[in-house]
Image 1 (tube, rainbow, N blue to C red):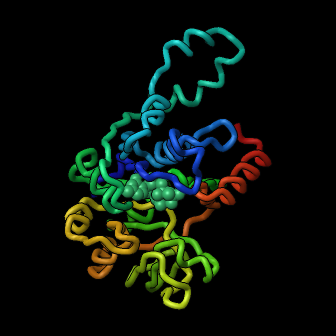
Image 2: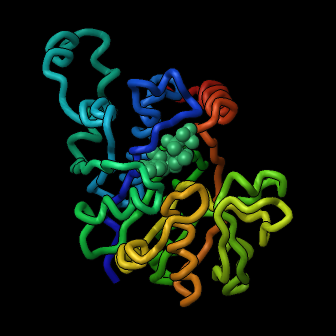
Length: 277
Ligand code: UTP
């Protein structure tokens, strides 16, 4: 089985819930404390064994590329000063990972963004992180936990968490049966994008972490626009699930929806209290 070495970051969305902040700045660059959301994601991917970060960007997202590059002027200014340590973490990331980019020209949905990343991934299994879903866990990172699940089952893995039933319309929601006598691992039988609570097959919601096998690309190519007129990864994964090829894993840790103002504030308070950066 091929190991997971690449992590795709769909980061082309407009981030309308954060306007006007996101008018000319990528949502993924919003900081929790001093660190941009996407840097947390890259750190999580690296600690799960990914060394190539494949980022799907769009217009107005150039700040992401600049962030994962050396700024010679800044380096020169702070060299041998007391401020130099502020750059230690990001310098380390830049030296340990390769960053590749492609642009999604039209924002046709998450499934379409993932398909746009095909040229960066080619024919191997890969991880997907939505940087606005910020995760924190005591021991292993969420993606590291998922890589272990992938190594056991060798198929697509989605991270899930229980949400209040009235919130199902914000998520992709799965239903399935538990496998191997575990309480945290399900073989997915069905999944629905943003169902009304009354139609939701469960309260198990997919969050922004996936491990996908490369056959997903062909499935997305054949997936028609769904909810909201967008090409939904949930619809493509449903096709895979029908063939028994999707596992849902209830991760250990906390997740913050930093694409919403409430989640963003909650994450800021959490990381401040924790004393991170
Ligand atoms: P969201 O719907 O949460 O992001 O998409 P958004 O559209 O940027 O935010 P709002 O709703 O307008 O505030 C989930 C993820 O998928 C990416 C987004 O960048 C985000 O990381 N995405 C979504 C794309 O890359 N391309 C798309 O066409 C849609």
